[in-house]
Amino acid sequence: MNASQPSTERRIAADTLQTYVRAIWEHAGSAPREAQLVADHLVMSNLSGHDSHGVGMIPRYTASLGDGQLKLNTHAEIVRDAGAVLTVDGRKGFGQVVAYEAMEFGIERAKKLGVAAVGLRNAHHIGRIGHWAEQCAKAGLVSFHFVNVAGDPLVAPFGGIDRRFGTNPFCAAYPRDGKNPLVLDFATAGIAYGKTRVAYNKGVKVAPGMLLDHDGKPTVEPKVMHEQPFGSLTAMGLHKGSGLAALCEIFGGALSGGYTTHESTLEKSNAIINCMTSVILDPNSFDAPAAQAEAEAFLEWMKASPRAEGADAIYAPGEPEEARRADRGAHGVPIDATTWRQIRESAVKSGMTESEIDGFANALQ
Ligand SMILES: NC(=O)c1ccc[n+]([C@@H]2O[C@H](COP(=O)([O-])OP(=O)(O)OC[C@H]3O[C@@H](n4cnc5c(N)ncnc54)[C@H](O)[C@@H]3O)[C@@H](O)[C@H]2O)c1
Image (cartoon, rainbow, N blue to C red; front, side, top):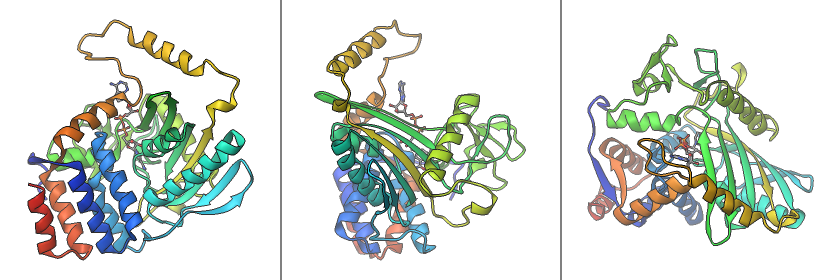
């Protein structure tokens, strides 16, 4: 791959892309429901503008399957039921399946008890965390999610110069009457690792302040994350982001009965293992009949701030993703040529024939 050259992009209709992704996983051995959940999740990440967690992940998942790490057709198992607290083992199943199932367990319990905590451990990559918060919000529930990327350090702690923890995402969502939920969902690194892959594949640089090279010096070259000698991502928000990442590591990895990142847990394979502790709340269990009105009054007040120079709008959490869904839903999902070629290679590995792939490729022109 020549990642130093900018690559061309094509736009692909979301439903066609979904059909292709479903076919890849069905050929690889996934049951139809699994293939559907994976396709829904990946394409929704692209639609939301998070290409880092979209269909570009397929080659990594294929490699993990080849390593024997990703376990197809594996379901979430409740290993301890303590009423409001559930501990769930993902057994290295597709994160798109086991996180979905873990949230279903938590939603059912939170509706019954007003609150539930779910510790999900040993899940294969669970992708865009906002997807799980949106699942809770669709059921009318508030949620907070703390996630670690177990044994896969990429980020330097504040004050350090080498990789000590993952891009450990945090997410929180608040459902709104008759409107899309507020969804705050971010990597605690300055940028998600996948965004360095997208930049590397496109042959472009990243913003200053996001990367350190192998000597700990600041750089804007995404290759330091993809070619040896490897550098690191920086944590977002200086000491505050670094601290939030540390607590995502411990809440996600330790409290769920999974594991945190240290010398003896370093991942040697292509697998990305996530552990996630989620707290799910039923807003109707609070004595707060005006909660929706208060939230809306605040959002209106916040958005009335005069615009800073260069700012096109003041967004509530989740609004940038809604805007991208509207645009990409209408005009298709952009995929760069390198990523497209890598997905094709995965389709071949999954057992699709060249002519089957060409059939999709022609439909996708
Ligand atoms: N599974 C994993 O191991 C893993 C690891 C890291 C990240 N991720 C996922 O990667 C995705 C991307 O993370 P990221 O850190 O690059 O996201 P990001 O930097 O794009 O931030 C996204 C969040 O900020 C809000 N936002 C964006 N622009 C805004 C603006 N101008 N004004 C107000 N709010 C704004 C969005 O609504 C969203 O809540 C997330 O979905 C995250 O869950 C997953």
